[in-house]
Length: 137
Image (cartoon, rainbow, N blue to C red):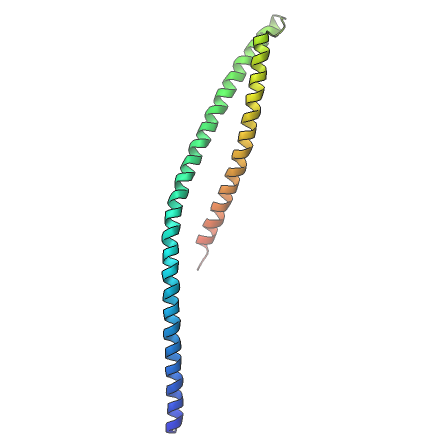
């Protein structure tokens, strides 16, 4: 091997080394940016966890409203059944209560549908995030 062949190989190796150093430097910059992104993501996940806790409380509140509505409906049903048994017309109060319960029922239905849509959307996004994180790197 001639001296010029050795120089060419040396130059090529030096070139490779400089390129590799440049690559490593760029990779370190990428990792620094990713680490900052991770820190921000962890903060955001804490906020998301707080929102999920609020959502759980909203679900419990919704259950309480359903329980209350169910009890009021049952109570009103007893009044209606007594009127039917006694073969009397429902009182104005009973009719007004029925209208009030019908309105409340519609509000609960609307709230339930909004909550269902929101819940399914949130759970789908969490499932996608989990699947992404569980995927091999």
